Length: 311
Image 1 (tube, rainbow, N blue to C red):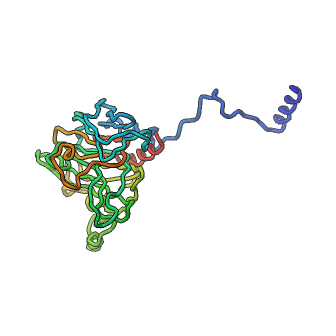
Image 2 (cartoon, rainbow, N blue to C red):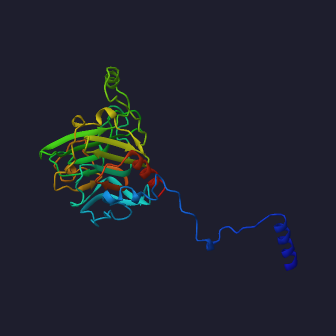
Image 3 (cartoon, rainbow, N blue to C red):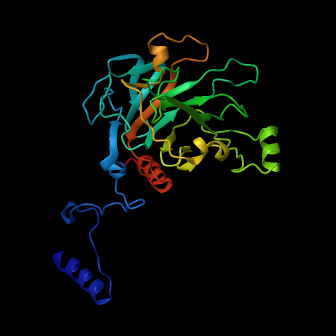
């Protein structure tokens, strides 16, 4: 039998057929995955300027400072966008002040994965916000900054209007407020403004992410006083409202002390505001990151693709 096997092998070599072994553990494993946007993992993006990272895999710990939540309500951990994520049922996770989370360059970026549903499925239904991440500190209902889903401009039950609202300290020490808003449909007044030569022109993005995991990013550019919103690597904020303070410098600086709350505004947690719209989140959050820089649109898209791929 050994002779027959050797003869068959000799015939294959003579015919130019070469057999190779597959699946062997002796070759050192599979080849590395190709970079995305020049990065091998999401952790490499803006690494030198990363202020905080909440993986939300099991216990809510902020991984850079090691800070644990001070309180949580309606919170569990289950399969999320990347590994496990934070699941909230009319709940939130609140943190003590983390000293590192203070903008020092005038620029700011916050990103997360969120899974939320439209809370207003009919035009006359009750409306409230779905907070994703908020930074307390200012004498304002939303604090220094809050990013949330909204229900204004309902187009369908799967459309989610994203909004970031801010009220931070200007160079004179008083407050500077505004927002970045995703319009989910063109309103007649927007159409009229565009026809009358509005610059930049209004634009709407339906943003049909209801009930599914989506990557949400807010950026602030201090040199031009510009706020932008991105979902799944694409800018969705209304361009006509992105530039504030006439495009002049407006560096972001938080009122202190400031603390992070996932899934609610501090004004809800503290009981200082009880308006009907101010409710905690029912939905999911994952991979929350905070930077003291404005990420470029290219880096935001790379971050989205890398985290979507589990990297």
